[in-house]
Length: 508
Image (cartoon, rainbow, N blue to C red):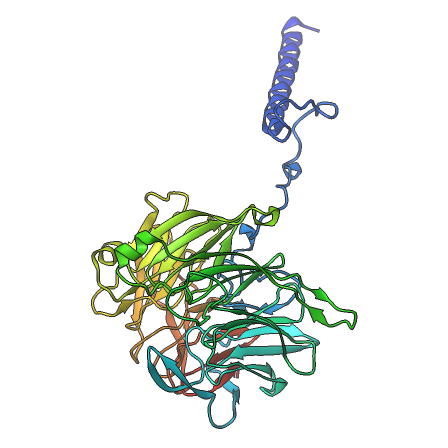
């Protein structure tokens, strides 16, 4: 064979060896970190690069709230919308299909009259009717039927069949009105969790002929407390722990010890394992007020629980050592300057979306703004962006923001609804609702934004294109201020109004 041909074959062979060696070395470097720094290989070295599909799977998440479940349902054991805004990061809004054309009313509860009772607030006693902030029903599948469960201003929790609107269980009576949203046990235990203005947060069994109180936590069970004894927040249940903030201005963690008795009925043996004031002395000094109640629903991301209070203090507490007996520690603190009752929302990257009111009109709230994105990994300078709403007093945010694709949707008490670029903070679109105060939390399912106004109209908008103004799909006059957040589930919309009833709308 002529020499030039032999030479070319020799060079080609060397190139194969070199390329193969480089590839093998690169693979080894990529995988060196999967063992300990001094660990020896457990088998023969690979002969070449693996296929792309052979990339090692990340280890399963072992903390409190898996980032992969942002925007997803609250676990897999119970199908439904189980707590306010659906999951521990407050980012799940329900399941479609949704009414995209003018719906019809499937039922109204009660068929006549209203869910009303007398209650005192700030020294004034008056009649309260229907459902208000936050008031989102829980909708879930149990025993072959769909349940709609909610607390209302008639001092009762109601258990309805989603198809007919008829009672499944008798009403559960409390000593005062119920403003917040109930939570259904996400682990399949037949338990419901709810607060009331009567001083108690309760655990209620659903596997008896009547809903039965198994345990209650008094707002006076801990010290010190500030403000009052209501419970507005929708509790979270994670790994047999209940996490809940109260208007006593304390954050509580309860080990539930759920189980079943010899008769097969569900049991609990709760123990209050941690509590802490939701304020600090610096906040009281800066805010100049003792109204520091926790009215929002706590959120959990990875191993941190987040909440805010009525004095504007946003906090994060590390839960990672709790199960091993170590007390949670505060890892994040930010002061908005004003009442922050909207729940903190957390995205998949751990950023916080916070809505704050504008009532005090102090220098801090004027500087910080009312619609915020915060980075808790930068506690000294966490503001990623902010948008202000300060044209009047009061102004700002009561409803909890919704995350949808690349935007955050906020609504203001003055009736504006804004779509804000989640990366830059740019306001992409804005529209106005009639009727005065808008406290409802916006809900987005299947590219459809649902939001009610205080003139008593429910609106549906197409928001599939986040860069253009939402397109009105329909609006339906219901009557009565709609400030309670709607629940969307499999073709229907469930919500209450201040006129006194709960309404179920469905696809025509």
